[in-house]
Amino acid sequence: MTLATEPQSGLPDMKVSIRQLFGFDSDMEVPAYSEPDEHVPDIDTDYRFDRATTLAILAGFAKNRRVIVTGYHGTGKSTHIEQVAARLNWPCVRVNLDSHISRVDLIGKDAIVIREGMQVTEFRDGILPWALQNNVALCFDEYDAGRPDVMFVIQRCWNRPAA
Image (cartoon, rainbow, N blue to C red; front, side, top):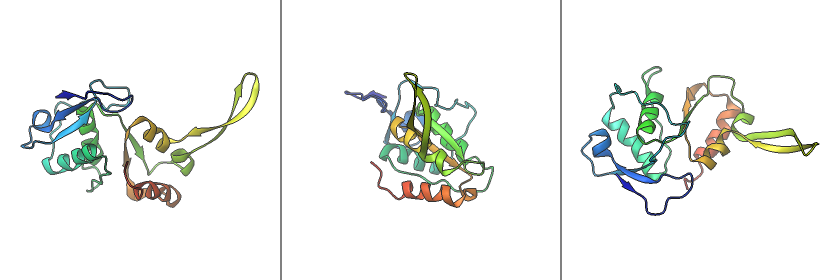
């Protein structure tokens, strides 16, 4: 593990060897955080990593790219992503698309608040802008069950080039 020389606020402050962390025969190093925050999943010490899937997820973290993990329901796709994030101390939030999530939940909305005794309207970020501003990995669960308006927003984000 090596610490970055100039850590930036909210960004990973070190790189870890996947050979040391996961035991895979690879020279790849992946950005990680030295300390977890409240959005880092708990580590399951009994979890067993599938090599190909883990390398794909790690490549996404290393290259700031989106990753799709496919498979049957209940096979552990989201858990796999969470367990990789847990080992990297990377904040990760699961968004369940088969629930009552709306477009407004993703993007944000205007809210009326009291400021200095006055009612004012301010924009409150949804999960997408919040995740982008806080360098959080989002795990979209039950992708096939997403409502069309919600999927439109996600697809617009998916199709934009990664930073």
